[in-house]
Length: 347
Image: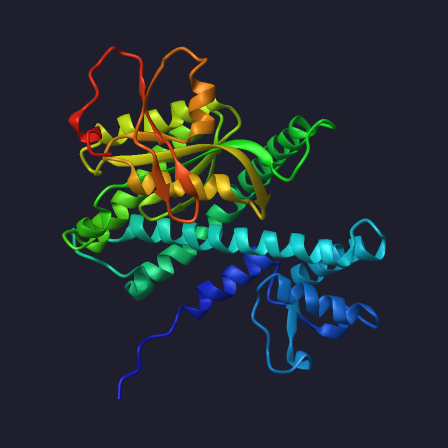
């Protein structure tokens, strides 16, 4: 019986040496002793790394030891509360794990033959897999400064938003934001007609266009889920401009179907990089009932847009949105003096 070839042990060893500081391993006792042992285990789990049945069997690199010593030291020195430190560690782990997988897949895709056929990256040819791994022996050192720089830039932006939002006059829970959902129309039917590789290309194109448009107007992409993007903006003007530009951009993109967008304005609760609350739910429900290639706004946003130039608002019939209640949405267009399309007649 033939056995499938395993991974190139030489490349794996070099990866460990280059990225983690060498093949030298040390046992748990050299990482933490006494009262520090429980914390070392907690933070290792928070980092999301695999563990053996018995911790006594665990072997660490010197890089592991330095990282654990540093984060536990923040707790020991009273700089961070233990639960806060664990939560921050989980946030780093989840974000960087997704980033690492994403980047590895991008490199793998770039090395796969452009045959147009579907190729499962997880079942790539061993030679391709080895080439992907080997490429990061150089790429890792080149990309690491970019990761640190981007984190610092985004941290400054996040802290600036927190300081800007702070107000002794504010009451209640949540920060006021424009929330928008952009949804590719008839995407489910499209999935059945195209290959997986074509689908992946389309999703990447959609995410790239959406991200560029949102960030160009000073908004934030909260998340993308295949055929949908969730974004937020601080002001009605920028949030609505994002929605309208998304519609225009997708209409001009031959690779993608058109989108429909729902936007609402009100308080949102931010948690773990995501946003929650009735404002978010209302935007999602508006998206579900929006006509193809249109932007629907709730009453709160429409009221604020009414005082701004550059937009035309067409109130639609009052309707009940599941989980939200009665809402009078408005179709939003740029002020061009154009007649409203017939698609709105039955909206």
